[in-house]
Image (cartoon, rainbow, N blue to C red):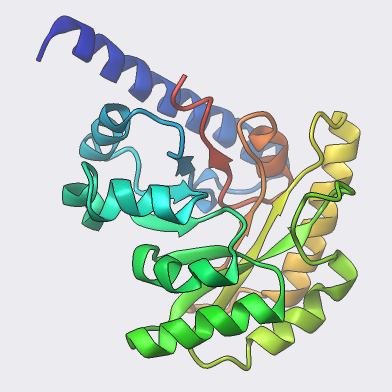
Length: 239
C-alpha cells in the first residue's frame, strides 16, 4: 500500500480512537460504562476509500446515510456493496413516503419515524418484503421550522401507534439538537430526551438493546454524558 494511503488510514483510525476516548471520558463523568455507547459513522459525505478502510479495520460497524438513492448507489450497487454485510446500515435522514419501499430494501434500520403516515408506509413495504424493521422515532428537539420530528409531548402517543404495526419494531429515539446552541441549552435538551427515552423504553434484561441516538460531531461528548447510546459522527471521523 502506498505511503499516502497508509498515512490516511492511520489518520482515520486515530480519529476513531480519539472519538471513542472522548466518549469514554464523558461516560466516566456521568458514571456510566463506555461500552454502553456505540458510534454510528455518518458516511454520506465520506470518501468511499475512507469508509472501506475503517470497515476493513473493524472500526466502523454501524453506518448511517441520509439519502436513499445515494445510499443505494454506494451500498447496494456500488463500491461499498462487497462490505455491506459487515455493517448495520441506518437511515438517518428525512424519509418521504415515496422512498419508503427503497428505504426498506436498502437499510437495516430506519431512525427517523416522525408521523404515523410514514410509519404505516414503512410497515406496508416491510410486510411485503417479509421482514420486521427496527425503527427509532425522531424527536423534534429544536424550534427550526425545517426540522422534522415528533414533539416530546406527542412522542408517547406516536410510539403507542407504531407499536401496533406488526412489521415495525420500535427500538428507541433519535434527536437532533439545536444548531450552535450553548452547552447549557444542549444539556437541557439532551436531558429531556433521556427522560422520555427512559420512560418509553425501559431496558428489560435479555431483551434487544434499545437506543437513544443523540449527538453529532459538534456535541457528541455532551450527548454521551447525558445518556446517548448511539451518537452520529461524520465530520470528526472523516476529517
